[in-house]
Length: 270
Ligand code: SF4
Image (tube, rainbow, N blue to C red; front, side, top):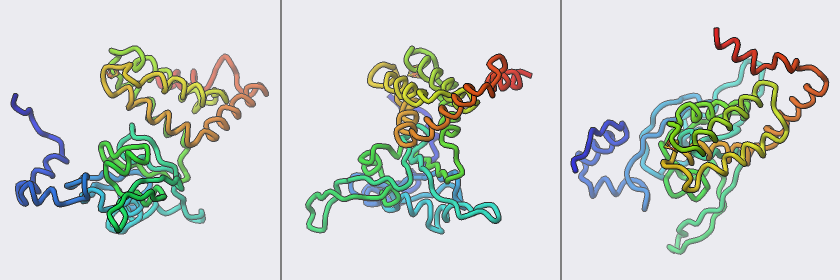
């Protein structure tokens, strides 16, 4: 069987190095078991978003965000506002499980004597490679890093991601077709004043029932991972939003006949 068109930018960049260096020399780049180069797409709240080519595993997530050669640190706050703080990082495309700022992981690394030792690591100290990110419970996936500072409403961020997946599901498998839509609808509700405190658990219940061999392709996992990880790591924010909506409704501050969601749908229909 012949290969079809190779149009992935990262692959083309790899080919350039392999042709120039030869396969054996190219394989010496990077780190053991994580050889070669990667094109990292750094976006979000950094001073210098862009594409950066790195040797796999030779740069940490913290360096990618803060080093002047890469992201250059978090963007400046508005005048008179305190410096921004890191809130979360999606390390490998929107389906990759999110990391929370300050998260620590226990990873097995090779010590100076060559023996494997368990090492506690801050999320920012994780080498940007395949093995480390998988060991930390996420993945380097498409190597698209999204950096979020403390201005981000994490529920809104997940609603945005879930809407994308609900739109992109091809609809062939019921768990993916219905699950991605239900998650998106629940998040739309939560971001339009109609949330419930129980929505956090509801979202996880749906997300847990999509993957695990219930769908034809990996899109089932892809739409579930962000929901599972966002809710697990920022559950208090989801519950707080749902509770606030419930309280507003109890006080009669939301007209049940003209909910914000209906207003939104009506506004977008014109
Ligand atoms: S899992 Fe894949 S094949 Fe199944 S509905 Fe989702 S996108 Fe389609």
